[in-house]
Image (cartoon, rainbow, N blue to C red; front, side):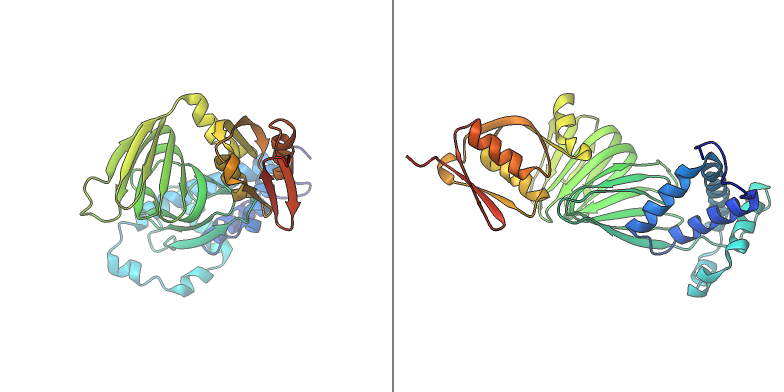
Length: 325
């Protein structure tokens, strides 16, 4: 089987039904294992991909018409609407593709949660076609309806490649701030109190969730990195190669350029259950290099043999210190 052909013996109608099933499931609870199965199904055949995006585009047109319905009609869409048969859903999409308006069907609002463990990563395709890559120990919730698309970054770091839609703003909420997409690729990292946003492409606006904090608002351009807390905001322009180094985690790498051992250890400890502990006496020693994010032992070995330090492994940690006389 190749990426251009269909599944053996699979009729076009079966492919359409499966595509409709995926669209319907994305409107409800969506887990990482669902995303993995969906990606595999798309990769199996160009016919699968064509059927999915054709139905998604058709349903998007129906969705926009439905958004014009009176608000009391929208409120009347109860939970039982989510149990419509898949064939009926596929039929509405096909009607929309044929130019027939089916305003009595509504795309239900959806919410899903995704998370990674320490050392884990995940790539997610959202229902609107946007892509999110989660870094280690990261948790998000995604909420979408006919008017808004909102991702809440509860902790960790994520990279966003957003499908811009002016009629449905895409926002990321984190650490008391809101990042609003203006056609963008950007990364966001937070520990709950501090927020860092790195913009690679397009434009984005960072603003405080509290409307009265007027000074916490700025428009970002490519290459800018903003760091925000509850009481401060700073923007810096970063060279392209430094941006690439900062996002090397997307390839499973950590890139250090003349950083202290403490700073390097802090980064490694985000990705590993075994923690690096740096003796304060050598905390300011500098190191450079490219490392596998999960190779904490390799880093310790380099510190030992290249920097002449002592490496001692204990349960759950590796202690790096001055060599004994």
